[in-house]
Length: 430
Image (cartoon, rainbow, N blue to C red):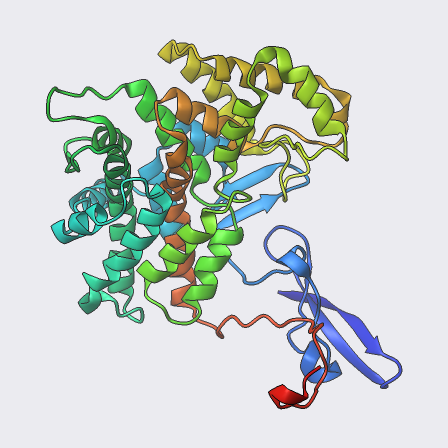
């Protein structure tokens, strides 16, 4: 909604643009510069899109200054305490919390689609034994398009909805298969008598030789992590899903692209980087030394899992997960020197004026890696866990975009290369 305009003028050319100021239901006002090139002949330059709104969306609201995160208007604190991941998935997909009947039907649909075609298991076995699970995730997810090619009309709302449910249902099955291939275990089939997180833990850790009992503490911790990771506005991977979606690509290709973007250590790989950092520090006695190194601008060492691109206050997800982290470690009775080290690092960082003044609080990546390690999930699977939860956000954003398609995404650039020059024959080149 436009409430006022801002004048952008090129005095030398005698041109003026009256740019509308758009205000959403919440958040900072945004200048609409869609006509800037047409009227004035200019593009804007915004590396990393740090001050650019690429779309309008009803799904997730973030206020970085105040440390606020809401899904469809609901505070993340309330959802984390009172909801569950499947219910949050319904909320993100359809905009409202489900009734008891709607939840039951949605959970049944998700459960019904947990299996993958057995030829995909053959495909997984074709990867090298030491392939990174994220490589397998991206490849298998994209390959789903080859199995549902007759049900990928993105102009059909029912087919879009079916694809969304399939992706949410199958992602844990694919993830667990990638892990089991990596460790040399036979691929396990989903037990649909279990709920979403229980089923995933069973898919990961059950073996044919003996019965496996899911730990309810582990299942609840996983459910919480998936809720906190479900969506986070227009981050790098979600923006990738939307950019690919703007071309009219099928949803499996879009989500596969999102998985690849998430793989980066600056994005979904951050919790994996936290564990590598803890291994580098090595011992509680070395924490003080590494805190000093982190403060030294000339030292290449960086504390991973602290601070956030958007939040200039405490990440609300980190506040929730911090308590859960301590509770999970206590409930599971886990003793691990690396986890003791992490708790020591957390304590110092929360009390040290250097970090407090710069608002470098531990973020969700710092705590999620610690919880995953306590649950017995290997470091190579950390980003995969993120992808399982974030799939809900990706498909919600894709559904929203597909229902209201716009122009294909096409950023421009500031060209800094050579100006026009003429071709020379090879024997004339100096």
